[in-house]
Length: 429
Image (tube, rainbow, N blue to C red; front, side, top):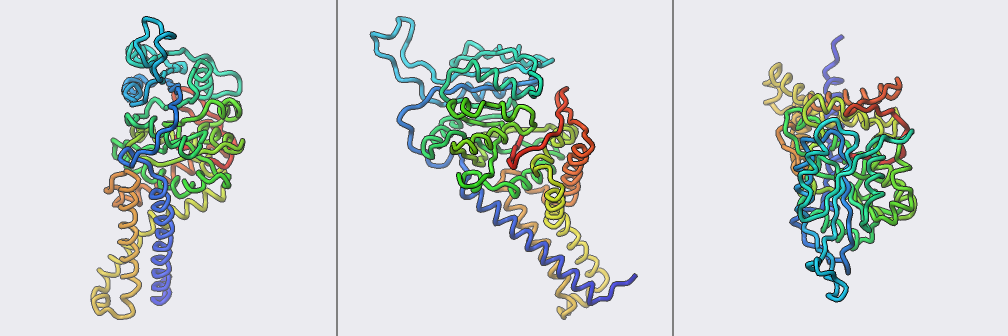
């Protein structure tokens, strides 16, 4: 059935205006959030706290033989002040002065590769490093949470820093994190890291997944004590021991795949102040190496980002289509009009307005996307492949929802993760 030209022009104009409006909302939301809360190593240093506390860095690791050494090297390189020297009368002859304020605890979570052996090769360095064999998770517990609790049980620090084995920390990451906690009186702080993408599919998919997260969850709201919204990332999760013990550690999050977010939610609901900030250089992580890892990894958490609500999934799917799929369709419509009626367009009459509006919508969306990608730390070139990226996003999130509705557990690193209802919180791991 042929569509009357007037109706076709009206539909084309409405679609173009819709795409422009959607992108304007997305851009303003994400750009303002990043500008207000981003923290990097080049930013002016915060005032130092009156005293630097002892910190225990806990690294839960399961089959991380390829990652554990690079991770530990960045942890051992942390530029953190040592403890004040003890008075000579109370210091033993073997103590040369200031003692390290850091300790590192690697918890081997039932690895079947050489994770533990490789971690032990870094023992005997400038910082105390222990490699602990994790126990089988208790009934109802997931392995990572049980490993974190085992590490915390043997930790001596007044603060605990949980770090994923695939994370890489800047030498100033911990120092700046604790200075921020002292300045804002936070009991929990998490950095949303820069994503290290190495393959085509990582560049294509990770940028859109994190774009969705930056729209879905606001750094402003997470940092606002009056808001219920909470968020955290397991790559860098710094928490005061007092708050950790008061909420029961990871016990409230023992059965969830977004444990870091649930811990942040629990801490916030207990009355403690939490902080969440994006960074491009203090913490970096490569979450999933390649297409297969992306396809296996994201379904275990993707639907939980939406509170496992079908309406939210539908709404954000429409937003993804409007911002990352529709502009390319508008460009195709403009090209079709140009090829079929170029003279009409050149005449710049009323009939030329809808096609040029479609072109303007595509160019506007492309410009907004490229600017946001640079702000978020992603490469710009995948913006030209947004239709493919949007289809991948839709496939990942709808797959996660279908698996939840059908009761299919996610499988990751040899373990099954049952889908469970989550609170209104965010995990980026």
